[in-house]
Structure formats: C-alpha cells, structure tokens
Length: 160
Image 1 (cartoon, helix red, strand yellow):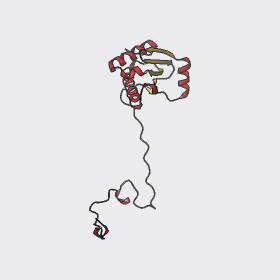
Image 2 (cartoon, rainbow, N blue to C red):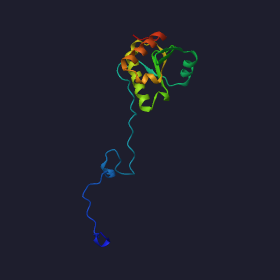
Image 3 (cartoon, rainbow, N blue to C red):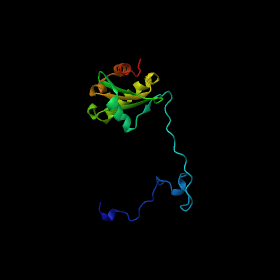
Image 4 (cartoon, rainbow, N blue to C red):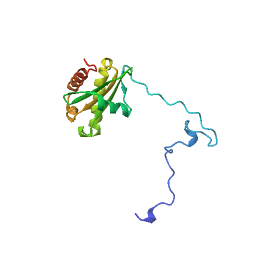
C-alpha cells in the first residue's frame, strides 16, 4: 500500500468516549466557579467483631520490649511480653526479610494474626512482640498455632 491508497477522509468515530464529560460525573462540580461541596467526615476504621488486641505503634514500647520484656522461644516462634497498666493487650509482629519475599512474610504475618485473634480473650494486658524465624513460614497452621499458644502460655501472657 502506498500513500495514494490512503483515503483523505477519516471515518467517523463509532464509539462514545470512555470518560464522561465533566458535567456527567455527579461527583464533580458542574460549574468550575461554583463552590466545592462540603466534604464528608473521613471514615473511621472499625475493628472486626471479637478483636481484643490492638497494635503497638510507638517506638518507646518497642524499646521497652527489647530492654525489659520477658522472652520465650517455642520452635521458630519467639514471644516477648511486657506487662503494663493498659486496659487491653497490644501486639506487634516482627517477620524479618530472611524469612522470604514480601508475599511469604505477609502470609506468615496474617497467619500469626489469626492465631493471636483466637487467643485474644486469654491475653493479659500488656505489650506482646511475636517474632518468627524462617522455618515458621513452612509450618502447617496447626503446628504454628500450637507453637504460638505454648509460647504465650510460657511467657505468662495466656494461651490455651
């Protein structure tokens, strides 16, 4: 095909544009000069029903866990516990990069959270740090549950 075979007139567009015009989207203001609608209050994150544990976020608690916490190792799981006067147990998870890639680490962290959620009613008030060695990623869930429960019981923080 050469240039002489290309038609000069282009065919009409057969489809509607993918994006609606600015006045077609109900979330956008119709007139750029009009005031912006009032924003809704940001959504609050709700805790799942039955979740009795909270996250540790402050650096001071992590430092106190490292300094004064009682540490127990059960198989590839390590639990460090620091009693406190807080009303509820607070939990953090330490899964190092040597455990595996991000997918493996996140999967192990989710499994640890599930085990702790099962035992949340039995945990004493205080701070808990659950650590996992690379072998924990390959454990069946029942064996991981047993190791975590025994470590929680040994550290004095609960467990069945």
